[in-house]
Length: 499
Image (spheres, rainbow, N blue to C red):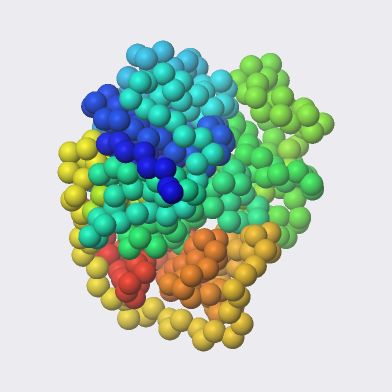
């Protein structure tokens, strides 16, 4: 017989969003079951290097931070969610400072920010320091029970409402469940993400009847290490904020390093495709400053025989962050009662079509706490999205000619690299859509999500934010909105209205 654990709230995921949700719920008196598929600190949050963006400087304000967020968002930001992020984010960060999280002195600058507003910890180990601090608080809290190596296998529903999670022979029961399972960038072969970040939580929500949105918008980090036989280790945006340049083998600058990530990623992608190599360099800066400012990166590269302060470090774009996810409102509510989502697994609309650097950890802190508040206050409430059919110029889906029912994850990653990478093109997308299975059928989670991603990129006949189509390289006003995916209906279109 299954073993059932009862509580007030289930949180799936132990990254920054899940920990923020669990702590907020526990502070409100709830008994929380915190589930994580592996060991704590194994996901993407601890890998975040760049920092946390917040308007805490004397020359800054939440409204300025909001303006920068919208400026890089490709016209798809939910401006209410952005206002929530930037205003409440400042308070969340100040609370962390008051709680003793050891942020470094000074504020950093990153691409797209008009002010120095990036807080770092441990040089380029911000995610590790921040998530470790939150995990310590959660582990010490008497109302939070951490269940490690407990994978969520299915969302349990009764009378249309989510009532729990099944994990193997164990069942967790609660009036509300928050999915904070991270993004899906590890589906790509070349990725900065932990292997666990394959969108399993999105597929669970989709199979439970929830809407997904913005799946085509995947941000490729421009500067991931590019050494044969080595993983695509992230080289923090903070390096460019401190003066690092992007050059070819002759030392000629390729692109302004402080332009938005999508622009820089495309420039490096074209450089690598043409010349075969692009490099990040700090050799024009004081070596002592580089060593002091980025000790973690210096040590990691030294293990590979590279000197961050003196060498040309080979880089190329890699799949990094997903703007798409489980569609929620600004309180984490989905269109399935009792089901909430937060962090990278959610699509609140706050990141638009292209995330502003260092807004991701802030999103986890703010919307994790808000999801917990709503889950305890009105677990039965659901969101009803106002969608309509896709714009008339949406292309018809290609006919299947070789539907795959199984595929090796490495091969799938290579297909995504080739066909849904930094730059996409109609005929390649059509070929991929025609070979991947119908996502409404029962297949592996990887294939279901890959099929939805490919269809989303194929159906959007424009370039916007992180979604760049070489065959249609400009934005289209007809497509100023997000594509919704729900298992029981055709894809819908949610228009983003001008604010």
